[in-house]
Image (cartoon, rainbow, N blue to C red; front, side, top):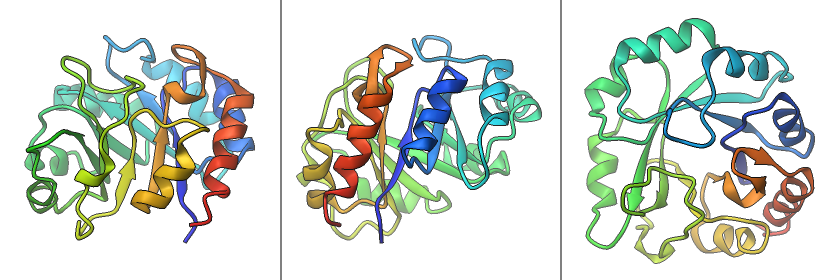
Length: 207
């Protein structure tokens, strides 16, 4: 199967359209105010409304109040939620929308235990651990820490760019890869040429 691609941290309609134009399967919208890539529900709605069919709109949240997530869903037709905080499986399931659980990987983190705990997730998004930062760090992690026997699909994130994504896909063979800072000219501003190069890197990985 071809590796899927999500371009995360979209803040502008044109960036979302560029992502899709070069073959991205999903775009990510950040609803976490401390992030430089945060968008309001109204901004996100404009981006999602511009997308063609068969592109998944993903909403990223960090320890958000459930009512705040529901209020966002009332404005933005998100098809998948992505939780980057300390959310429980019960919290994630109660929102009634398919979800990914993000795990910041470092030595000692038991990914098999997380997969069992969040068995209702559509997949695990594996990101780099950076103290005090919930994502978009531009840092990679040791891919050998990922067990081969994970029972959930893996979405690989953390410091990916056009130069290393091919090696990442060949090493991990994830269901999908997720990129944000690796295709930017500035935080929250995507670069069409970098998106194109990243997509070519995934395609040329041969997996």
